Length: 94
Image (tube, rainbow, N blue to C red):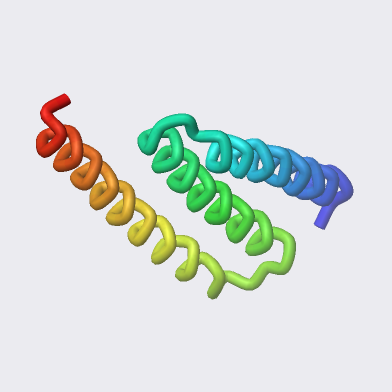
């Protein structure tokens, strides 16, 4: 691979790591359940980004199957959390 591609991959690793750390801060601080759900969803998609960058770095295309599966599971988990939040609001009368 070219030097520019390697530098771009390293830059992507750093950017994704910073994003992951900030997402964990939002997950810990909250303040609401919705904020935490969005943070968990973001962490899942940042992980997919990491898998994509590792795939580019190592040229191991079998990792893309893992990324696609994680994307589907993260989407379904987000839908489940959203339904839970709606049910909680309806039960609480708020």
